[in-house]
Image (cartoon, rainbow, N blue to C red; front, side, top):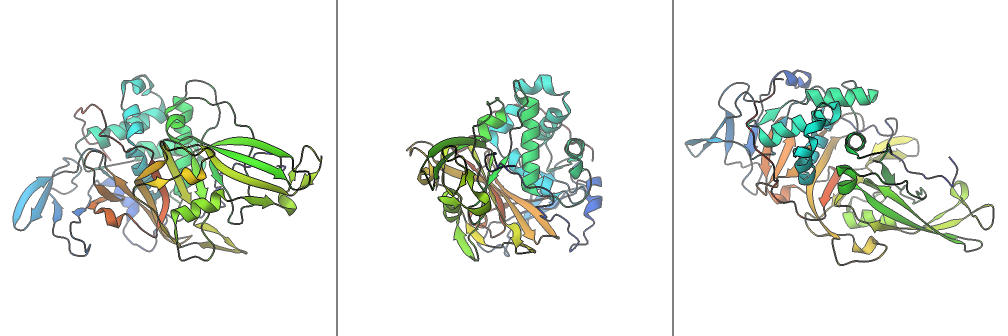
Length: 424
């Protein structure tokens, strides 16, 4: 690749050693796919260690009926999570997949599209059909737990790297899932759409070239934004402009910082940088490579903004995970400072899903925190275990993926057929 080429990159498996292996827990996760038995709890007090409510299954295996008994202060009553809240069993180091799918299951416009009549004639498609049937069970079924067997088989057939029970990266999987949905729902053409746009901490990576012609799908409508690049030759001051579409922004973290804000990470991504040495760009006016100043801005903000915090990287020859506590807002994330043309409309975002990663490079675990549009509450998803949490518990130093919506999600407008819980 030359310095004139588009440098749009996604994490490669060799670059991302994000952990999903949970050897630290002898919990027999590989066996969990054979049962939908789950634990459900609810946090109500400010101190998470003082729970005043316990939820216990009415019958062993729980998933067959989706019925639960809540015991509180001597009284018993049946309890069930609202539509859209459902645990996902771990089928062997699949927590990375469970966490990512929970974030997509909480993306209301995507839910409405997949469960609408538009997809009925695509149910025979192995990709679309697998997504629709999972979304139906979670949003239209009557169960607190289900299996990912069909979805996992579909993903494994598309990408051999996922055809095993080894650890994988959540961000890489999200790109794969969005790309698979786009390719099977698009109206025409075959452009590879989903990609991650990233810059290194020193600001030397650069992506900038004319965008490929767009093709429409629910993925492009929801997740696609556009970056603008202004370049200036350091010798002749030749000015150029280019744009590039993106679906995920990979944000660098401040070096050696124990705590920072999400705005700090965004500022690092959009700060002006100078490409020198091996990163020089070919100046069309000079005819040779020159030091080049690059200013990146946001030309078009997406409806759904996916931010990836670059926690995994190298320090010299040593691979490491950055444990910087990134403070992120639940409401009012302002992108105005980074827009090419500042606007008062549609630049404040609301958080609706977080994918967390605990552990280190070789041994870790993924969970998700998602806001349910029907109840308005936040829920913590740890594979099959689900609990409702207060808003203040969403902030975590383990955040890895953040999903924001440009407009608050409304209650999904979807049918509610009675569906049996799938066999696991």
